[in-house]
Image 1: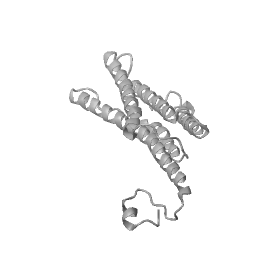
Image 2: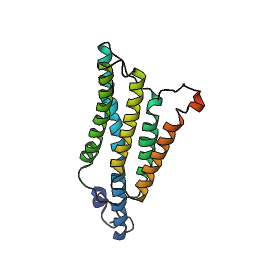
Image 3: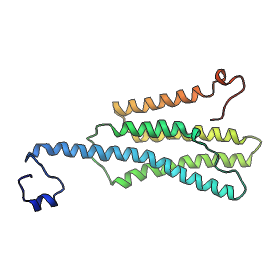
Image 4: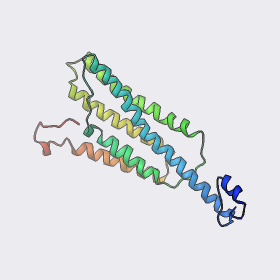
Amino acid sequence: MASGSSAARNVSHIVSMDNDFSKLPDVVAEGRRVINNLERTASLFLSKTFFAIVISFAFLIAKSCGMAGYPFTTKNMMVWEIVTIGGGGFFLALQPSKERIRGGFMETVLSRALPAGFVEAGCVAIFYLFSLANPGFMSPEVTKSISVITFTFLSYLVLFRICWPMDLYRGIVFTGMAFFGIVFFVHRPLSARYGPGRFTPL
């Protein structure tokens, strides 16, 4: 409390400056909001980080063996980075949350991010291995486009998993991010924009 000695105030974690214990529930609620929302956003960003690390090392090894180098460009990951991770993480960080904190912070984040990142990287690796085994069936551009669509779709599954259990706010966030992603994918390859047969790879 504010009326305590200076030594007691210095070693305390929380000091009530107005000697009013009724403010403590608000302090606890704000702490829960910060930690719960940080767990969600950190899981989103770390899943991308794990994916990038695994894929970068995999293609670095492939390049050193004389095979294809890193195939993806910034525009290939626009929906993933801007919509599912950037937009989803931004709005989830703003949600009021009074849910009780369960488990350790790092345990919760890693249990969500690690599997997601490795699954996304594994799917891309499978497509490229299949393309190497059957070069006449899948060209490099087709393989890249399928990989982009796949890890973007998986990023929405990650966002859905992090939004679960759904409430009204998280449902609106997920639906909105899904809508913007669909608009992006439908808008880019329209032949009316590029001319007949001039589809641009994702």
